[in-house]
Amino acid sequence: MANTLRKSPLLFTPGPLTTSLDTKKSMLVDMGSWDDDFNKVTSLIRSKVIKVVNGNKSYTCVPLQGSGSFGIEAMIINFINKKDKILILINGSYGERIKKICDYHKIKNIPFIWKESEELDIKKLQKKLQSDKSIKNLAFVHCETSTGI
Image (spheres, helix red, strand yellow):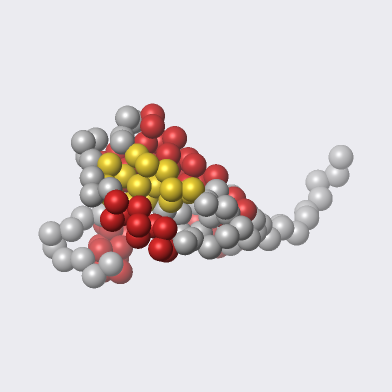
C-alpha cells in the first residue's frame, strides 16, 4: 500500500484532542526527567500555574501526567478526608466516574442526580445542602463532555 498523507481531522471529542504540528514536533525530542532543560521547563510551568491562580510562595504546583479522570482521582484522594462527606452532582458519565472513584476509595458520598439534558435545579441543591450539615465537600463536572454537546 502506498504511503499516503491525509489531512489530520479536527477532533471535537473529550479526548484525544487535536494537537498542533508544532506541539507534535516538540514532543519528538527525547529528554530525561533529570536533564537540566527538563527541570527548567518544569519549574517554569509550575511557577506560571501558581501565577495564573494568583498564588503566593506558600503554594506549589505538582504536575501530574495522566487523563482528566486521573487528575480528578488524585485531587479527591489527596484533598477529601475519608471522615468527611462529599456531595457529587451527577448529570453524566464523568459525574458517575467521580462517584465510582469515591466508592473505590471508601469516601462517604451522596449522589445528587439530574438528567444531562436539564439544567441543575439550584433550589433543590440548596435544600439538600441545608438538610445535611455533614456535607463538607462538593464535586461536579463543569462541562459534561460525554453528552457530546
